[in-house]
Image (cartoon, rainbow, N blue to C red; front, side, top):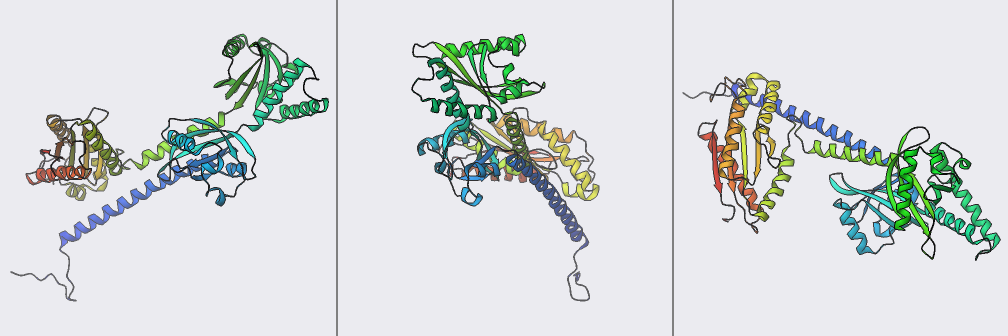
Length: 498
């Protein structure tokens, strides 16, 4: 008998079951939209934290593209240091600043982008044409979904000038005021040296031998909580406790013996009992007969800089984790899986080792959601994700949520037998959760259907074969569902057969 589903106005009415399914899909869509909005908000907050660290304090900071050398971003201190407007500065490349040969710049950028290079010394040209000696602290980070080099620019010009004048002053003390210099020139240099010693924020001092101070500047005295006259020409053992003084003497003696400048970072306690991270540069002065004379020392407080770098790396890592993590189950998401899958597929081709993929679908999950509600559905997804994670034990094995109620398990270097064992363990682990599902039609608890495939891609095979392999796994999953669900279908796939 034919039934007319039209209402009196001539419009077709939806069957009750179809309306219920549409409402369920609308609820799921609304929920997914809300979750996506929350994740995006978290990412925005993480990004704000990164930018706050980037723009904070007075140190010049840049983001540089490691491939082209283009300046991607700069904080206000960076713009002020180089003397450019933001618009003009962001049109420049590293080659517009550096005096190094361009091939060396490209090589250094490549090494910095891979994390192989952490520090560079260079000479940069400012907008005014002035040249400045700089040290660049570099590290690769993600910025706007792209890998860039985070650069902290340290101006070393004033420090180098102070060291030069200090060495000159020491030399004049040895040879007398008539040595190659007029008295006016000496007074001028002496005045410049005194001005630098009193005003430069970097600590500078010299040692007459491994344990006796010579001159010291105001910054060094402030750090130690003393006056300059309490430091100059005094023994280290009168300034520091015996253990600290002895460690310094041993290190200074080694520098004199090596007769070369050294640079190192060390945590030191200041005059107020605070621990600060200092970057030391110590340069021994050796006469023509290779006898040691003085040790010129400088120390820069890099505590805030190091903390900012560590916080930026932590925030960047958190941002990367969130962008690759499923917000509900807290395992890897599909985006992360696709990146890992491509990488492992190519590695498998190079090494000529097998690779396996397992795809999981929760049986009749839609009816579970409809009957028990979406909160119960969320709990179910979390429990299943945990059970799947417990099914693998190697660090290389990878579990991700593929979408909705589907999950994937990637198993590098795994043969057919090993794949079947993992797939069966996953099926048993989910069943052992004993999550009630009286509307399943398969069992009275939540179960899964599993499709899996194993292949051995040879080197030279197109990456398109990876897509075909994924399709084969998907087909195996649907075969398991067609055969009654709560079962495994595993196939061997020939990735080399076009």
